[in-house]
Length: 212
Image (cartoon, rainbow, N blue to C red; front, side):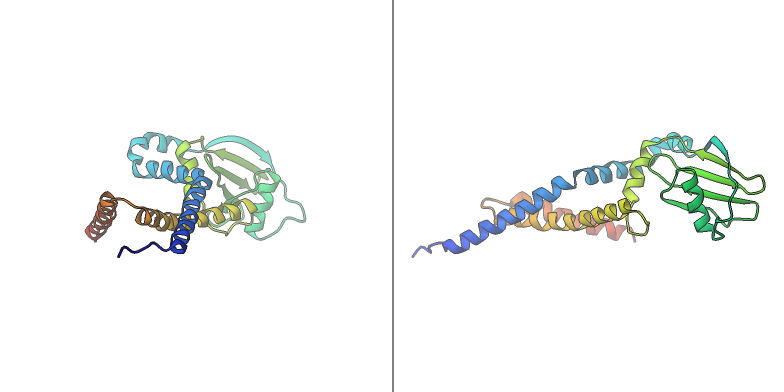
């Protein structure tokens, strides 16, 4: 006797399929800019030898400004706070780090940004700040965004970006799960699906094993 399909099971499977399809589709659409950034930046990283001359030229800093800077009585003693006060004075507040250990004569700050970093040299003896900047480089722009992650900076934009990176991580896992689910439950032959699934997995294991 031919088994009659359970209508409730069919409805349930269709509902799950729609959920999986929606997750797969809308997270993918939302994260298009991030996926393009990771694709382009990884190309630069993987094929850096093609852009060696551009890399070397764009790493050089060129002086573009000098300003007098005389600290007042409210100027802090802590180097991290000094760096932040100087960058605010220059209207350059943002991601930065103090380079090396400041001396009684000199402090260097690296202002890090997409495309062009800026060196801030404070000569304490003559109360002068010298500004040097790298030329804009498209590869640095994409690499900066590629490696921008975490929640360690006191700026809202960095926290939101870190949240989106976490969403990318979660979505990649969901794309794998939803992609496999939607293919398996759909009727029809799945020969090439299993060829790609098994073949890709085996190739990955073989290549990783070869690295040891």
